[in-house]
Length: 291
Image (cartoon, rainbow, N blue to C red; front, side):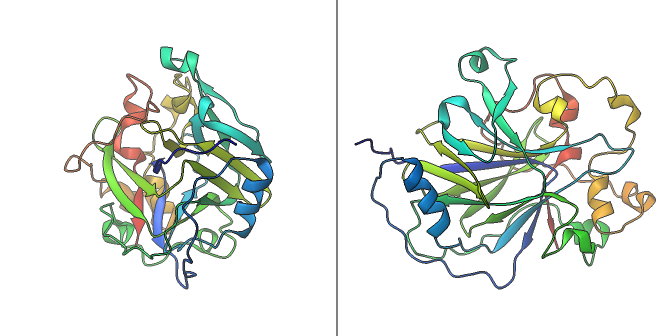
């Protein structure tokens, strides 16, 4: 019988993602920590019966509908060699522009309004303390008292995706060119990570040293390592989408430039960022938090 290898699951958030508190979070109950075989029936059962994680935060990936901001695609990406199986989603090759990707390409699934959560077999039953998350605050920057209704529960109608994030180790880091705010979520795992939304499931096997799954909300052309010939017609910075989420007019938004993450430690290299692309690496496409 095959067994899994112990590894931490590292989920790396890139691009337009808003981290916010979720009230009335369910309590986390104990799980098992013993290695187990990875079979389709076993994983489906785990995804359906595992207790909801202690979702003290949610992550909103806004759908970009601003005519002057280039289109963004919300997606989940992982290496082909990590994939155990997928149902409901159909992973496709994201890019092959680097030699390493020719051997082991990045796969991705686009997101279209799903409510997504992560399931592992490594929860120890202890609710971890929330740590301050060092991300730019939309309330502080733009005086946003409330997000617009379409970015609020229960429907999150204007969200490209919403992630329930367990109360685990969240930390911000400097991604891209060193000025972009990214966020990393580290989960205990026995070597398998289940990504689930309703009837959709992806199962990835985590190998020590290569245990990263990427959640991104970025222009697809950049994620694919190619140049968007229409990029020059998009005159507004990516972060202006955050202002729109709170009903802030664009003049006010542009009068307060989004900060840069130069004071943070650099993120580990995920291999996701295209080389020689300032737009992909720019602080304009940073994570944020509200309030």
